[in-house]
Length: 106
Image 1 (cartoon, rainbow, N blue to C red):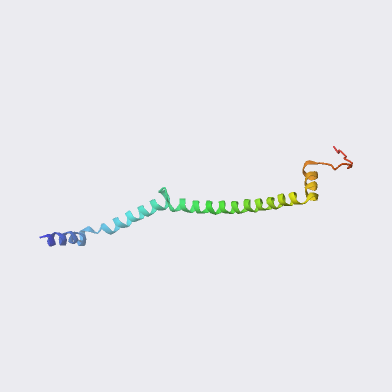
Image 2 (image 1 turned 90 degrees about the horizontal axis):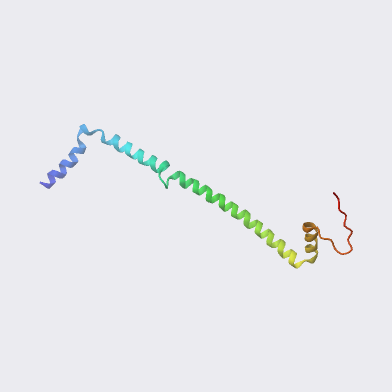
């Protein structure tokens, strides 16, 4: 008896008056795929945007790390070389050495 019930279940799907099943499956699959691609919280578009943002942030981090390395070399140079320290102070803070003539131009 159970075998007849199981056969009947599969027979329903094989009947020709149920031709709407395949288009229904295609429509449902399409709707779910579109939902996952565009509207879901973790959609493919959000994933792509996040990937692009990560790449941009990594580039920015590399740029800033290069700037930090340059500044550390400059600080090391200022600590170890008195002439460069004096030159930096004169250029940045307009310091003058004793005996220098200072002219103010307005």
